[in-house]
Amino acid sequence: MAESGSPSAPRPAAPPVSPASVAVAVLSAWLVPGLGHVYLKRPLRGLAFFALVLVAVLVGCRLEGNLYQPVQGQPLTLLATAASMGMGFLYFLLRYALHYQGNIAGAGYEYGTAFLLTGGLMNLLLVLDAWDIVRGKKE
Amino acid sequence: MLSHFLLMVLYALIVGLFFTLLWRRERKEQIKLFLQIFLGMVGGGLLVAWLMYPFPSGPPAPIP
Image 1 (cartoon, helix red, strand yellow):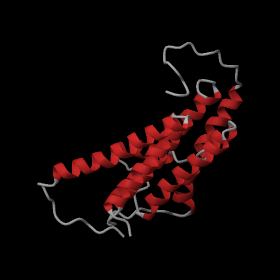
Image 2: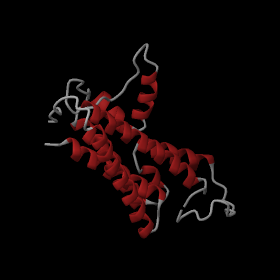
Image 3: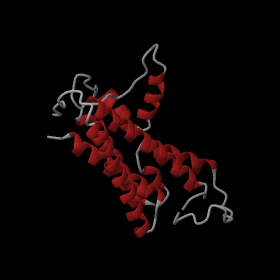
């Protein structure tokens, strides 16, 4: 790993960080993809991440994929919903403002669902990344 | 018009770029990791498709 060096190498002590900073970084990272990185003074990386998540979500919508929501009696939909909600405000925008619904009969339904889930999961990884950065665990 | 193959390439492109930016900082390392992920996904997909070729399930559905 270029940025972290040897895994066994001692890491310099991270400066203390306020819980408020951690909360703002994590919440902003979840709410708007890439915003956590912008908040942590990594604007280019944040913009690139925003673009990647947005493209994944837009392609998923174009293919009429499923934007998951919990279905009674199907507990696995809870996991899929959590993954989809990882995309932050985009999920709520699609679900409640645009009333987006996938088309199960559409030819691109499965592909679109994969893109939508991937967009959400990528943003969840960005939340973890922002959390690591704000605590000084990562560059 | 999007084909199955183009969607696979697009997916590999997005995922490859994402993890490259997430995990690497140096340009040379970034290119190396991106190629590993991108070619691994596209090449792996083609390999699986080739292995499944003797077991056709019908004509592919058109994608709008």
